[in-house]
Length: 311
Image (cartoon, rainbow, N blue to C red; front, side, top):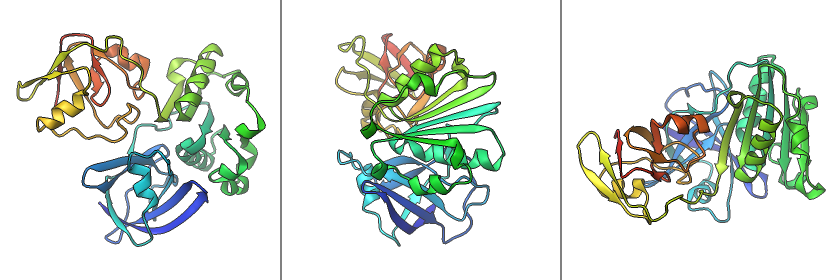
């Protein structure tokens, strides 16, 4: 669907907010945790969380950190101007709020975008929640004024790394039955939160995470050469140590949608019909890795000599 940039404003010196509207009709509704796929050029697509959950939205609102080391995505977003048009996919949600007795929302950096949306939705639904937002400094706190003026401001706690470390164990202490924890941000923040939550007694099924960036884990067998068979055609391709499954299949003419290329977004995930994968993504949970029926083609490899994928 085509949208137009109706408003552009800087939330901080490095974070831009955009409001996107449609000139051809109403926009589809979406819930907190949803994202948009933006087609920024012929071969560049990126996912960004939506900040304004609504059943009948007048606009899509995004907030994007302009990474100085951008591979092209955030840089392209930062160059958008009011009046520019672009194509997007309808909203999708892989980080949805599920039923719970209470909610604990934790965000770091630009991880605020889905968490800010969740706080708005939970307040409208009169649900019990608290929120903690970690940033580098007050000046780099996106949506700081909006959070201060929100009707649920008393439920929001801010902290800044310039003031020193925080006690993550305290943030996740004393879960109650049915409570849900949602955390979003970089891997260096999320992993300690999940470790502390597990130590505090949170059930794994109550922990929900969305990574915005990650460092790929090293392969257990980096020199392993294996084959991938495309189930629909029977074609087989050899995957060398220095190339991803997605790269090889794409070069052979099989369209593989990609976005993050870091194993955090799930765009390239497909069914795995045969073989054992070496999962290197952070999108699926450990339990989903154990099930072994899906694989992310941008980063994961094989433990077996052959993988059969459903594309």
